[in-house]
Image (spheres, rainbow, N blue to C red):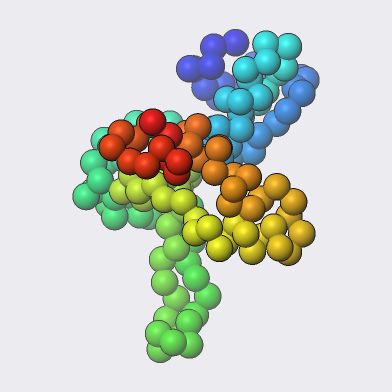
Length: 151
């Protein structure tokens, strides 16, 4: 099966997989790619939205034009007391790349305290020092402190 060509006909989808990853956002794509590194493993990556072929996805200032389109789930918040009872748009990506495809190409990490807080709450292995190597593995940044950035 070709990884580049999506399958639209359910009859063409093989019956068995070792892993099914639901959602082709940033995390889903990385997880499916890592699992697929083992040639003995069959991985199915499911995405409800279309391919990420809209030109606006690659133009950072155009990201708001993607709201309410076929690549946005178009969620709304519940009415907010602090904003006179108004509900607000809560765009979430519905395309290959997920919300990372509709967020102006912004990449950021959580703060050290967030990760350390999760570890303190019992999430073993989620402290900042434990996840830092994975962040560094995803990055190629020159001119930065290599203790904290992939180079």
